[in-house]
Image (cartoon, rainbow, N blue to C red; front, side):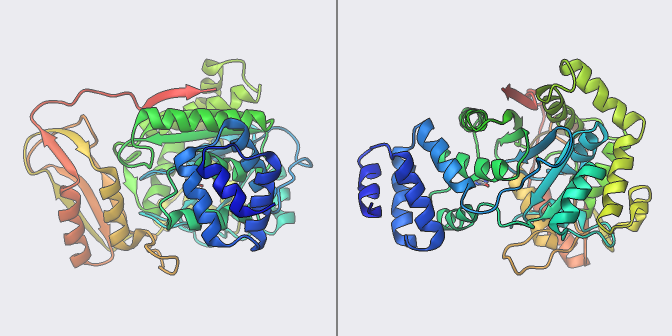
Length: 434
Ligand code: URA
């Protein structure tokens, strides 16, 4: 088999066979197929697409390109959640302990990534002493006894995606549905859960800008998950403005703790209850959405979800007291308010620009080598639809120094659009695809 022939076949609109896809992924992973041929192939896939059978074959070939996590020795239902990513997305910090408190086993291997804030691992490092490095034996033991682990990759999961994603990133081939589906689903399948819930964001702060695109992506991922034998559900949610109020690592941890304390109604909790109810019903642990939601609300009301977070933090070497006393978490030395320039209603908050403000403050990484300042970021006090008076605080900037705070305050003010009329309300949860 020759890679050149496969490129020509896909360029001309043909469907690759299972064997051809396996040959291509094996060769690219072991280095016998060079980047220049693979970039021609990804461009051909970008323009010609793949049918569902090809997408499943690509997903499975990528999944088997490295280690897979064997959770068969762990008792009970094992679930996993994936978000396509957005600004202020601290959902895992709330949802995972909530699920563990209801007896669902959550084993998450996360990366760090680049972007406006760190990833979930960076956020969790706000807990003094907490470590993402968990050896495999301990990883499996903690999933069984604590019910949840969030750790850096201890196994070499899906090496094909590491190479392929880096290549797509520099060849204009990230936004291709079969390539995105196989990238995300190969990692989820390799991580071993029986139930997978996908939070697919849509809007200006996410990479699926329209609801129609988000729906296509969600439907394909759900179908591939089901064809691979996993219970898979996707929830399409709005990312036109940041999720919740905080954007920044320790700030998001504080918001998550407030949510688990029952002090944070709003779309963050709405999302966590919706995703959690999808997991509990798909797993057959609750008969319907209403019962599942009541069970989750109970885990917040009786403090069991928050206790689970504390247990998890301690099991990975962190100070559990910080869950009950957030003054033990990093705090920025400079805090500056951003006043509203006029009376009116907040009609838009440019989510990705808010993310950039957090990144420039030092809360995210522009390159892999950058060191994150866990304390800095932004807390929004006004969200879309809120009425504001001139001079009232729209947000608080948390910064390391006054100059950085002043610049961030200017940039953040520019993220807000204030209009005389209240904007039309759009639903936060747009669809659930089962
Ligand atoms: N996230 C991934 O993991 N892969 C993609 O291709 C896009 C987003």
